[in-house]
Image 1: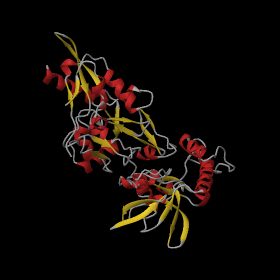
Image 2: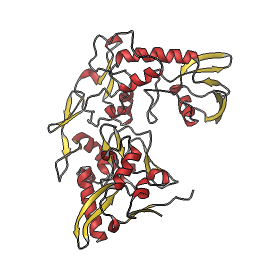
Image 3: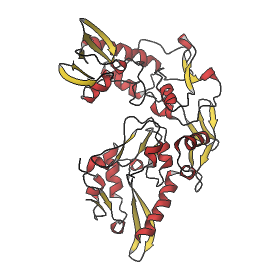
Image 4: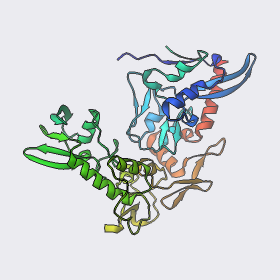
Length: 138
Length: 251
């Protein structure tokens, strides 16, 4: 099946308003708990044009460490969207979050589940809410 | 081989050897359960996934999680008998685990708000319903640290022979899968305490936050073939390192 659009990150446009974090948190948790957001804004120092920010979210690696390390094959690539999704097979051992080389996976002890970007099934909410065009679906 | 049968008078198809609960959920039928997990072998312990199955002139109640599909059978997921027995089983489980919000909520759906039965006389692990999900998760991970200890009313979950285990890695998967969230896990500077053992923690090489237990790390490195430095840092420090690297590429 043809892939739907991919999430394009444009850090030079990001103002650090964190609307994406909030949108993600509201879509993926009841009550919009920011700790459950799958996208996180990191400050990247000051540049000539002002403070720089980077949007950090899962890169959906082709050869993903999280997929390799999972003992129950709970991380499954959605062939339609290209996203690696956490399936119901997860038993909450937390290894995936430990090995992700980018720190894009977060293990939530309360839920007993890793938190990671699933591209919202092909239509990322963060991109829809970004007011500056710093996240785009192409 | 394909098996065709009916669930609530709707035609469904399944592979031979598939379990009824998995098939029913795939078709969108709602069957409650507590001890079922997709990645673990079903054992029919909680008995909440009861359904009525009729085939070959017989009619019986069975746990759908470990019932292999039969050609031509007729399944009903919500008859008065099913409702009645689910309610009874929920009431019995509620006596064991009155502190579980998930169980209380499910019981309330079946009109069970209190239980006529008392809690078990001795309960070293309050709110445990003995469903063995933790035992199965531990087996699946290849650790085999957890098991049933004791018999009869003294039966409970614990480390084998009720003594400290070399097998337990302190990964806390048991606590993650527990339907009543009754397994205590405590992370302190000394380590992670679970099942009466304290496991030393690997600390992030940058900030000193706990990453995982030392045993879990050693086992993962031996089994998974990823570089050792993959296990050295906490999520937050990894993300901050990655963001610096990305920033140097962008600007």
